[in-house]
Structures are given as structure tokens and as C-alpha cells.
Image 1 (tube, rainbow, N blue to C red):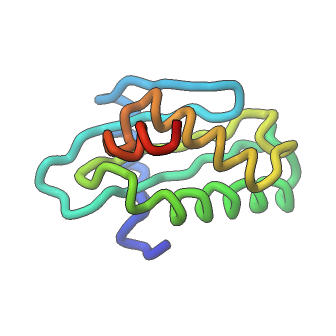
Image 2: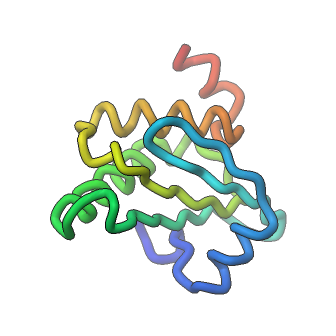
Length: 120
């Protein structure tokens, strides 16, 4: 995923945290903030030390990034969102990570409408 698709600055993270609502499932929390003037979505990842050691945290981040890359055509575009991994996320396989993210993205209304009906 290109750098232009990432929320990198702490101020941007805080803006999304402060101005948005969160939705969650057992393994992930997602914060969403609409950005009408933006060309595409941006995503920020946060995987804390409670998830595991550095190897596990990096693996979780790789799984999340790959899942988002695969879901890219179905995601709403002018949005900033943050994905925060919870403690159980390090036990998931790649396929389970993707399914969990699809579930939480549906709750956050981040997927396009036709993608919602096609995957059910």
C-alpha cells in the first residue's frame, strides 16, 4: 500500500480519534472519519504491545495491510479510518483476519453497498 494511503502523523490520528465514532468486533476496533475533499481513503494501523512481541505485531500489521489491499476496490474512498488490533488478533490466520476486517468494515459502513450484498 502506498504511503499516500496511510495516516502517518500523530495529529491526523488524533483528529480521527476525536471526531469519529468507533465500531468493534472481538479482534479489531475501527474509527472512521469522512473527508469529502480527499481523493482516496487513508488507513492508520495500531497494534499495541499487548498483542504480542514485535514479530507478532508486524505479522498482524502485514495481514491487515494485505486484507485492505484486497478490499481496496470495495472500500469507500474519501475516508480516513484507523484499525486497532486487539489482543486476540495475533491468533488469526490471514483468511480469518480478512473475514474479521470485512465484518468490522460492514459495521463501520466502510464498504460500498454492492460489495455488502455480493459478499453475503
